[in-house]
Length: 81
Image (cartoon, rainbow, N blue to C red; front, top):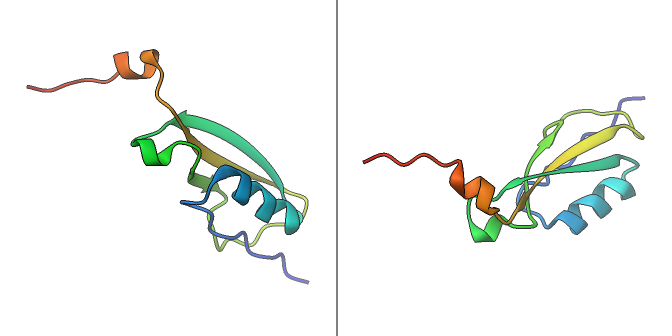
């Protein structure tokens, strides 16, 4: 029996993506990164494995979710003239 394919979750809200993975028997793990835009806060920006990849049920799927940028995130940006 073939492993099911992981769904593509980019652009979905975190809670919705986690529920979808759990319903398919996966174990979601979330990591956060500074969001590029305010619309990216709380939204899946990436995942591993990628959508469409066969992956064993019960295995971990990592979701990269945007968070509001902190002062530290903003201070690390470089500006060019």
